[in-house]
Amino acid sequence: MPQKEDEAIGKTLEIKHDNGDVTVYQSLSKIEVKKGDIVNQGQLIGVSGTNELDKELGNHLHFEIYKNGQPINPDNYLNKELTSEKEN
Image (tube, helix red, strand yellow):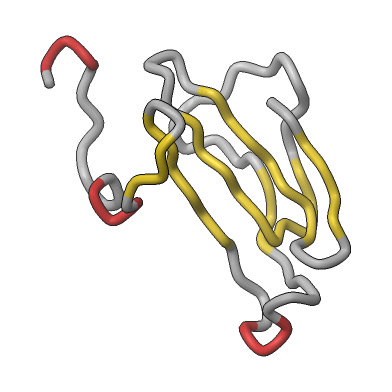
């Protein structure tokens, strides 16, 4: 669960999922998990914040999903019921 802080994009958290997907959260003001933690659905992992790059957006979260190293549209996953990899 790599974490880093960058003045331009704020605190960043990267979560590697069991199925190989990676989710990235940027512009965090606080990170609530640490490397080695097991994260469960609904768990607080961080708090949104601001960054220098997108100051005009104010408090916000930048969210990315990668599958096999390629970025994919998060809209395909948001507000959907989770299923196991076997069901897909």
